[in-house]
Each structure stands twice: as structure tokens, then as C-alpha cells.
Length: 330
Image 1 (tube, rainbow, N blue to C red):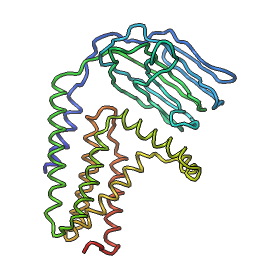
Image 2 (image 1 turned 90 degrees about the horizontal axis):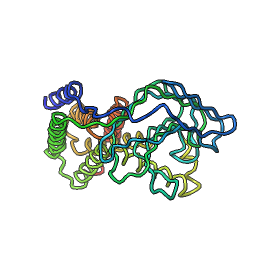
Image 3 (image 1 turned 90 degrees about the vertical axis):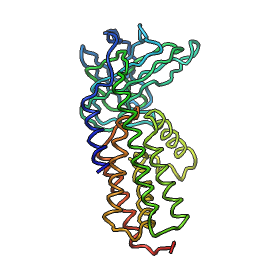
Image 4 (image 1 turned 180 degrees about the horizontal axis):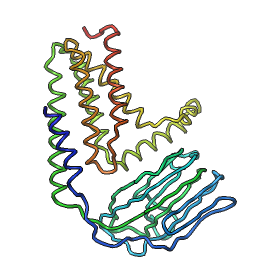
């Protein structure tokens, strides 16, 4: 009942409480610069930018530098983005990208990302929205639409970039809801200790998997992206034996979802071996759905039904392994 109540409150707050209020006009203008070569093409219209490239060795981009930068303020970016047959390059960031970056210093042409939306493969029109903070000491800020050492077609329309403030009612509701979910998760995992199985190792593993899952959903989107990009780089460069792994069409974050919930389901079943399977599966489903709902309020994260399905599948497979395997912790 507590799970259902929290789910309803979370969804209602998300649907009916406005988070941001605009405080200024659009920061983007109709003046664009371009970078292209060879047969790569850039078409810029009033409401549509289309970029295509067949050369993975080049960067093809349309960009502009912000003339009026709201330093030290929140900024909202929104756009509809579409990609077709985008093939990524050697590095994780070699993709089709829409990026807002700041210059590191005035003497070197190096930029650090504030917001990046990356796409690979074919994706139909989808609305992307992200807010971010422009540091008070930021240098030049650039907005770019680009195929960064990648091939394919990238399109963007209805783009907007404008300063905003976060509304107080939303902030209060977010803090209360996150606290309530935290209490619920602690009650949920705590109840698993009141079982007939008192093995210390199983309890330690159960808490460990639970902690990793909670830490994983709590990471802001930019930190999560940074971590998985570095893991990708390490896999790619650590050993030639791992090179086939790096080119597989796997999303490491999805693999993490599956693996950690598989471990959680396995250990939970072993810990609560005298509890009905449906009760254990219910705990898995509540964890999978609850952790996705929480991501509504984590910056840069998006709750996905597909992720909840992956989590539930991994947990269910863990329960199955525990049932068919011998119990080494008797």
C-alpha cells in the first residue's frame, strides 16, 4: 500500500507541478557558423537544421556563440532531434551530438560540456529537454549541432535555450518525495532481514547489491555519462582481447541494470528461502519500478519502462538461479 501511495503521489506531482519559470528571452539567434568539408552537407532553415556526413575523419557542425550569457543562472534547453543511420567513431563521444559547451580558457580552443545529447543509429523525432547551470566564471559558451567523427544524418527542430528559475513548490515536493522513497527502500530492505536465514555473508551481499542499486539511481546524468564513457575507454584500451567487446551494440548502463538486479534477486531469494517466490518477486518489482520513478527527480536522468523491465527480468532470473542451484549457505 505504501508503494502504491508513493507511486501515485510521485506521478501526480510530476504531472501537475511546474518546475521552471522562464526569466528571459531565447539566447539563440538566427546567425549560424558552419564547419564542413568534402561531400558533407549542412542545411540550415528557419526551423530545421540538417547535417549529413560520410567521412568519419571529420567534424561537421553548425554552431553559434552565445552573445548574452546568463552567468551563474539556470538555463533550459529543449529541442526535437532525429537521427538516421548514425555510425559512431572510435571514441564514445564520436556520435551525432547537440552540445552546449564552455571554453576552458581564451588561449586554447578547448571546450568542456555543459549539456550534451548524443545519438547513434536511427531515432525518430523525440523531444529532448535538459536544464543546466552556467558557472559564474564560464568563458565563451557555444551551442553546436554536429556529427563528431561520425557518419549519418542528424536533424534538429524547434530548438530553444533560455534562462529559468526553479519554483519553490516543486523543490519542496521533490525533497519530500525523495525522502519518502528513501524511507520506503530502507523499510523494504530491512524487512528482508527478518527471515529464517541468518547467514552474515548473505546479509552483507544483500546490503551491498542494494547500496549499489541506490547509488546508481542517485547519480546525476552527467556523472553517469562520464563514468560509463571512461569505462568504455578503459575496455577499449586495456587489452586487445577486449576489443571485440567494445564494438558490440551493448549499452553498458543497461548491462549494469541487468547484472545488479540479477545479483540482488539471487541473494534475496537465498536470504528469504522460506518466503514465497511471489513475495520475493513482488519486492523485485517494487525495487525496479520505484528506482525508475525516483529518477524523475534526479537531474539528467529519465525514468524508462524498458529499464524497469530489464531490472525485473534480471531479478527474476536471479530468483530462478537460486531455486535451481544448490544452497551453499545452509
